Image (cartoon, rainbow, N blue to C red; front, side):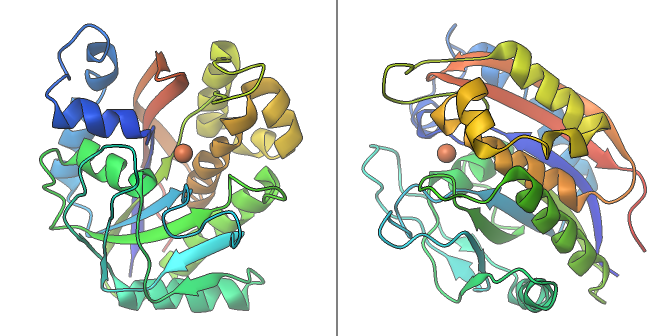
Length: 283
Ligand SMILES: [Fe+2]
C-alpha cells in the first residue's frame, strides 16, 4: 500500500539556484531563507520517501503560452532539465516513477480530471530548484519524482477549489496503489508576488502567513478564493498558491505542522517553507 507521509511547501524561484551555484547561502541576504531548510532536509533523510509528487508550474520550458495544459502529469522514467535562459545551471536528470504515475493518471481521468499525460517532458526550475534545496549538490538521485504541472501563467487558470480537488483525487489514487511506497508531496511556488506592471514587487505578508495557517488547519477556506481574488490580494503571480493548495489536498485526514519558515522578500516574492506530517495516512 502506498502512503503519503507528509507534505512540504517551498519556493522554487530561479534566484535560489543561482544563490546555491555561487555559494551565497550564508550571505546576509540569503541566510534567513536557507536557515529554514535543515529541519526539512533532516526529516526527509530520516523518513526516506521513495517517491516525491511535485506540484509546480512550468514557466515556458515545456509548455509555452501558445499551448498550456490546465493540468499535466509526467509518466516517464526520467526527466531532463534544459537551459531556461535564467543563467542557472542545467541539472542532472531526475528519475521518474512510471508505474505509480500511470496509476495516478488513470485514476484521475476516471475521476473526471482530463489530464495532459506526458511520456516525455522537460522539467524547469519549478521542479528542479525544490529538489536541489532538499538534497543540495544535486543529491536527489535516490528519489523518484512524479511531476504535476498546474497552469499558473496563462488565463484561464484552474481555480483553487479545483486544484484542491485535484490534490484530493491524487491522494485517493496514491492510497489505492498496491505497492508498498512512502510518498511525500511538494507544493512549490512563491506566495505573494508580482513580477511586472504597476504593482511589481507587491508582498502581502499578513495574507501569506494566514494562508500558511489555513494550509494547516482549514485548507477548505482557501478554496473560497478565486484566482482574481488572489491576483488582487497577493499579486499577479500570487496564483502560484494553487500548487500549495493542491499539495494540501493530497493529505486526506489529519496533519501536524512540524516546521515553518516564512521569509520575504526573496527576489520580490514571499517564501513559505512548511513541513506537514500526515498523521493519518489513508489505508
Ligand atoms: Fe513559479
